[in-house]
Image (cartoon, rainbow, N blue to C red; front, top):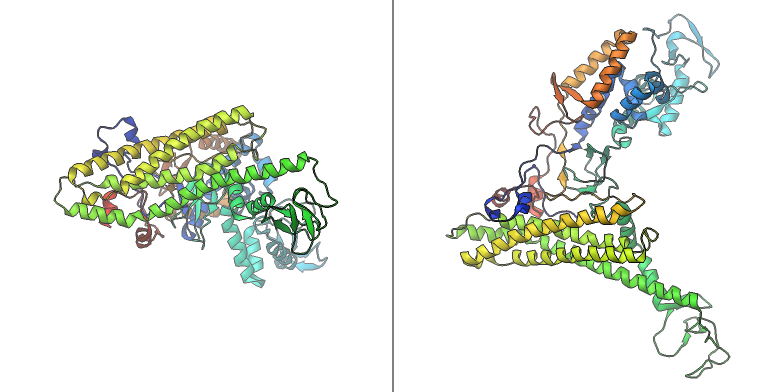
Length: 615
């Protein structure tokens, strides 16, 4: 379920005049332009730039070539901070050995062209120009290297191809792999390049592909690994943790169970268990359609409805000939009663979840009606000229309705026995359920009131009546926002926070809507220049003295505490790697959301009301 607003710029509306006279809670609705999104959209154009920035940091700090830096980052899943922590704790040698990085000290590892080399794989002597020596010192003929690389690429091990030597842990130079494979299989070399590039997304816990269908080709990068909900540039809103639709206040585990329960036939099986009995001969489910307890299956077998046992057809109103089943069987009765109770409980929560989901879809169609009412009202000669409270209230209705809808799957699992049977006593479960349902009921009542006022034909009312509706909408917007916050606090502190197993986390409540990721800049000329310089001066840096090494470690520790990135020749402190501030204007975005498509179907959560009205 996506919010019914969407757009292509980061704006938040403000309704200062409309909120005069309210309490301090109204400050939450007085939104200002954000300083910058903490999530970034990585497009095909900016993927290389994002990867180069992390590579540049490691190359500069450790005086490494690019393929060594990439090997380290892939091993540590592109977590630069973790890499630096291991370096400080265990030292450079341990860091390199664990990742399979071998840094040679000699400046010229190339073999003499006139010499002959014995290949230990094919056991043949080849000329020096027909063999390749890796950083680890092992040398084999180019044909054996090429076949080894081809096999590993086809097996999906492109990102970490190890040396062919026995018990050698060193990772092969990607430039050598690229050069040898491209001579025989250019397409496979392109596949190798693509795997290396996409490893920044596939192996990076901070970056994930957008799950949109059809796939938009974008990836989302977050600054902190936590349960959060994000919006891609394509408009798709999803949970970053499980990549399913945004589902807070449900945890990922709860939503996965709920979606599966609604999708498969589990409740159909429950209904069959409650309302039918299996035929003792063909085992097909049989439903009783009369009052007599002697039931006949379509296969011709007669059986007793009370116990399910096969019988003959001779019977009276009081008994079946040759059959008696008056003995009480407690286990079977309990099983049937439990199935009935679980079915009715599921129907209760599912019906309310479905009702609010349907209401959300119907209320989404209010856009055209609301815009038409606002347009008519503005054309009239009236002392009311600002109608941003209408779109603000409509936005708050959508956000609150969405929270209310997903609160029912949460309650189904929170107070059921499937997940937390041993976490709470029956008395504790009852107290917490009453606490949650009281807040849920208050939110539901105010959401329905807000919906009612927004559907009023205010374009036909006099100014005094419109002023009354205006104040009601503003007040209810503040109230529903506050109730949503309190519900999330209750869930995080009083319900999930008290559990021993902290496996159920929810995305925090965001009054301003799900955060829209901003596009990552593709202007990284300084990064490429720095990388080229680093590669050209690699021979000089490989012979670093011990004093310089100690100084570099000290610089590393400082960098962990106060990271800074060299962008455009200047130092930018306290800025995430691979990101730009919202004030940067060095280059234009390469990809924008189609504004016409967004405005034609839904509102933008972050556009000011006057922009929506004008469009």
